Amino acid sequence: MKQANTLITGLAAIAILSAAACSRKVAAVNKPPDITPVAATPSQQQRTPVVPRENNPTPPRQVAVNRAKQSTMPPDVRKKLDQYLAKLEDALFDYDQSTIRSDASAALRDDVSVIRGILADYPNQKLVIEGHTDERGSSEYNLALGDRRAHAVQEFLSSQGIPGPQLAVVSYGKERPVCTDESESCWQKNRRAHVTAAP
Image 1 (cartoon, rainbow, N blue to C red):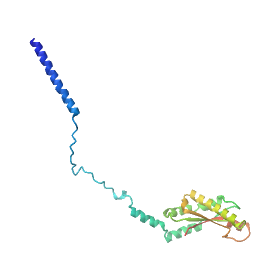
Image 2: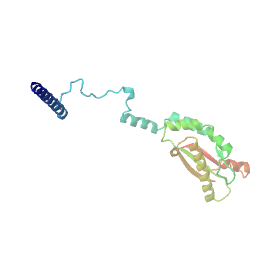
Image 3: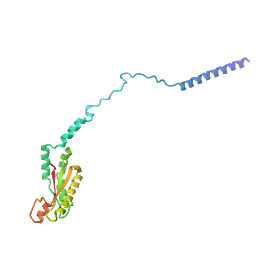
Image 4: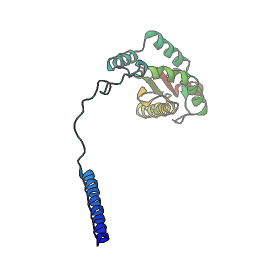
């Protein structure tokens, strides 16, 4: 009997301790987190990052100034562009044709890299491509033919890296011949596309 009482007392003690342990675990699980705000110390406060000057983007005002500088070509640069364009041979065409011949493409390609470099610095500067014909045919027909020749050169120069918006075309047809003799050699000189800088 004494042993049974001791056993019952021991079991009761184990049951009480188990119940107490379980209630602590539940309390620990159900306990809400501590959300008391803590004031940040000065070292923890966020600071605006300092970006080194060389990584800063160009200020908007400076961008506007740079664009303004590039919008007008200085006289010395314009003179250089005119000199290269003067060296650029006219693209000559066969009779009644607007397809660029191999000799014409070679003539156009000669100085196009230098011209492209100058135009890249001055995006508002345009080149004018003039289309010309010989004297044979009506004025209307020759204006249309001159226009096709000017557009053929425009496409060629665009393929060489000169932006399309910097290329304008105009057709003079047979109105501005460079030679007035009535011979094939003279007519060949007039069947041309001439590249010049816009004013």
